[in-house]
Length: 146
Image (cartoon, rainbow, N blue to C red; front, top):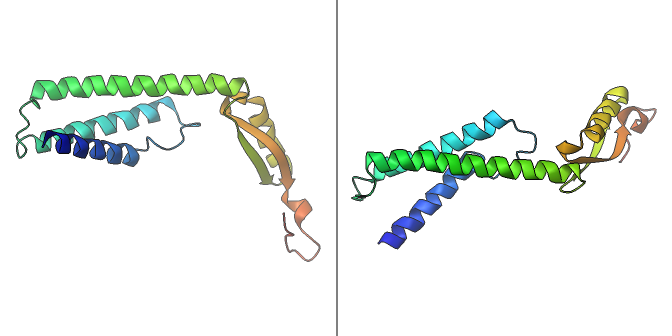
């Protein structure tokens, strides 16, 4: 029975993490957004234990345990995610973990974006090409194939 409860809780954890955006790219996200996701996820996971502790007779899930669980889980998840972000940041500075980008835009705006992405290597983008939309248009106003 304990194994099934544990596997069920792990499935709930996976669903909560997915719902809170843990498995999405955080390349351009801010620190407070990432910490907010962690806080929301940990609070939901502790809430699941609070709701299930009486019907399933989870004697370990005392208020004290849940408070310690909440604090330790938050610290572990937030710290590990931030360390991972920093490691990826440094990897991008040295040309690793890059995403290739083709910019499609008009004139100076597209060039300015390409310039910014090229200068800020820590964002992790490699500009392959800038395509000017005005150059793609033919005389009859129909855009040609790229």
